[in-house]
Length: 293
Image (cartoon, rainbow, N blue to C red; front, side, top):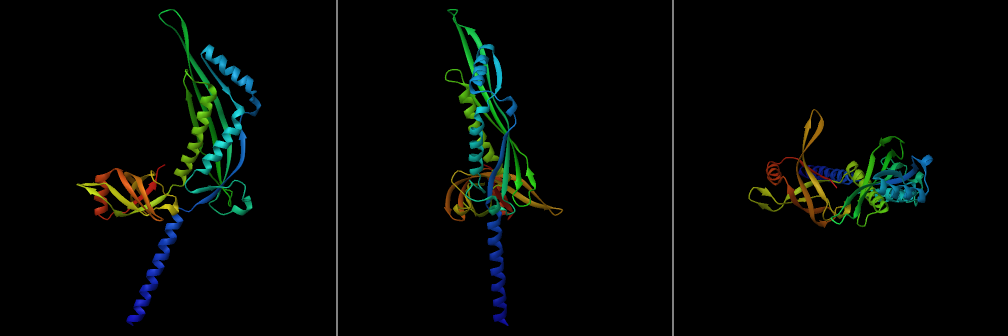
């Protein structure tokens, strides 16, 4: 009888371990993401590069102007691809896999509509003590796209985020070109940021680290190199409660990964909420950790 009970206990233990491993693997599962159609909303208003720059330069004299700069369409497309490639939990499909090979639920196909690429100049004219006229010109630019995210298998539309990048360039070395390129570069980062918030990395605090008086200075989380953890990653700490069968989260602090110490473990510095995190850990409360960048 004792042998049977020990065997049963071992089976239950193994089942729990396997379930926990599957849950941990599923929480940060990576998905394929593919760029589908990309369009520009203002093809009918297309200007030649010379006309576009000419109008921008005119604005430097008259004070203010805005112009569609359609020659940057390919640059924006490259920025979108870079943004899709940088997300934590997505692997960009650059054409090596056919779409039929990634028809798994959770994989995404992204269509993009470029809704705005504009540059605007604003100038101020003034005279110095020698009555010499000076013109100070600043440039601002916008690059905006609307993304449509579809599930590769079900074709369901999951989200339609608008993503915007802004750029600025001053009068000393400023040009509309620099402002637009800065806006496009920022657009790339905004695409990545949106995807990281859409599918963040998740972890749990598995051990309290260093403590100073009544403050938690360090903690260890079960997120390591195998799931994409890296030094400098910022994460929020949330207390989790179940209310009428629904999960409710409230933020109690922030962490920053100091060191990735293995495939499934990282040491984090507590950046805010040190007192509350310490109190909740000592009370055995359920705390989850979610990436915020």
